[in-house]
Amino acid sequence: MRLLKPQEAAALQREALEAHIVALLRRCPGLLALRGAHAHLLRLRLPRLTAAFALSKLLAACASARAAASSYARNLFDQIPDPTAFCYNSLIRALPAAGPALAAYRRMLRAGSPRPNSFTLAFALKACAAAPAPAEGRQLHAQAFRQGLEPGAYVQTGLLNLYAKCEEVALARTVFDGMAGDGNLVAWSAMIGGYSRVGMVNEALGLFREMQAAGVEPDEVTMVSVISACAKAGALDLGRWVHAYIDRKGITIDLELSTALIDMYAKCGLIERARGVFDAMVERDTKAWSAMIVGLAIHGLVDDALRLFSRMLELKVQPNNVTFIGVLSACAHSGLVDDGRRYWSIMQKLGIKASMENYGCMVDLLCRSGLLDDAYSFVIGMPISPNSVIWRALLVASKSSNRIDIVESASKRLLELEPLNPENYVLLSNLYASNSQWDRVSYMRKRMKDNNVTAVAGCSSIEINGYLHKFVVSDDSHPEIKEIRLVLREIADRVRRAGHKPWTAAVLHDVGEEEKEVALCEHSERLAIAYGLLKTKAPRAIRVVKNLRFCPDCHEVAKIISKSYNREIIVRDRVRFHKFMGGSCSCKDFW
DNA sequence: ATAGGGTTAG
Image 1 (tube, rainbow, N blue to C red):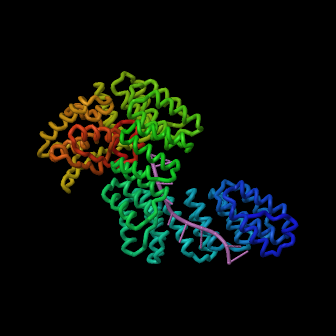
Image 2 (cartoon, helix red, strand yellow; image 1 turned 90 degrees about the vertical axis):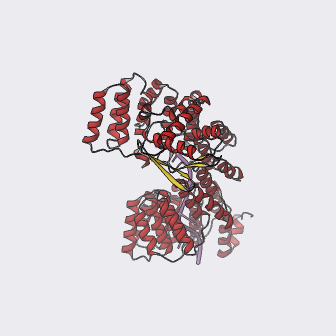
Image 3 (cartoon, rainbow, N blue to C red; image 1 turned 180 degrees about the vertical axis):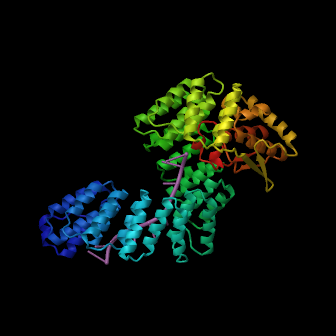
């Protein structure tokens, strides 16, 4: 479009001027363009009324451009003589943080006029949901109620989403039930997303079924939450079905849905399908790349993960701390200490602030490579207080060392942080037992008893011919336990002969007495795999389902076993893997 | 009159 000259503007009617302003702002994608348009409008010396119109339109454009432009938006707002509700609403929408947005809302209430309308509330609620700021949201809810505002569909879904974002599923459900049967797709999606977020996958998937029964057609946003629930549940068959459903319904597989699918296939063990989805994408953002890199890393496809990361950098996609979780854990899986250190410094150079998980990856990498001293000084030098995962990693690594100082300080910190986690007592007790410090062992037992902590047995299960066989830690009552142990021994031999890295061997190390020294849950996991090999002779899929715990190596182990026995083993990983970063045992987190 | 709600990687 052609920009007007001041004398042309002066000759135009108000309607024509307003049309010019609207057309101009429609073509402004971001803050810079908006400032340009603003400058142009100032040059036109618009009449007072039209100038106010231009300012409110600018403010609205500023809000929808979602540019970090709080101060600019406030500035625009202050230039409007008698702000209308539209102006207030645009201002609230333009302020991304809950605090400033609510301050603008209160300012509106104090001014007495104009009165807030349903748009005002919807924007303010959205700000609270994005924060998330549950207390402020509730306050808003109460205030709006006192103001006698009619809760329309947008306000209701705003509230529902606020509670869903704050992980208050029961409250969200109350709002959802209150709007029952109005066929509001957004409400269904928000509720399914809320359940999925807190890991209530059965509720999420159940609600998806109810939604279909109610005749509400899902869209791609709904399907993101549904797929994400499948990923969290490790529900491969359902996930595949949902993918087919998406295709059948002609639902667009956009950036977000592709990312969710990559994550689902990777977590459910089908890394090639994940790769297929990634390759088919036309546009990939940081999250998509990260999902793929992390997926490859947990499958032990280290070279692929690192190659993909290089490609990401080449294509100038900005990595973040999550991307580096994938990169660093890939290095840890292959013992690439030097590479890991190099990536760590790349991360710093890129100005990415390391998260607790990033520190965990680095400690894991150093520990797995036997560099206990380096790991310890790394932990001591951390600018944030290390979490329990990190202390556990150090403890596991110092087991066969003589570093009593490390054991002492790590165990002290660990029990301070998590005095009620049975896993810690089991770990320490085993550690002291292996050093024959029996007084310490009984002291641990005593502390455990004093704190009323009881260990709950871990279990894994395997699906063979539709039957679910369950294995519980240290339960040897299985009628075929002797044969199972033979298979286990054979697996250990084959894995050793395959000449893979020692840290994988540790997972499948000797059975029998020594086994008690390794992580409790691994026992059941290994029994399940061994039983599967014992029972299925033909080269077919053995699926280890819903394991309560998987170490990061399990995909590598599965690969070795698959190759060596010529049978496909699909490992379903329903656990967020950063939780057990550190190669140690872990029980409580996974119940 | 103008505008609006739900989604993804750890």
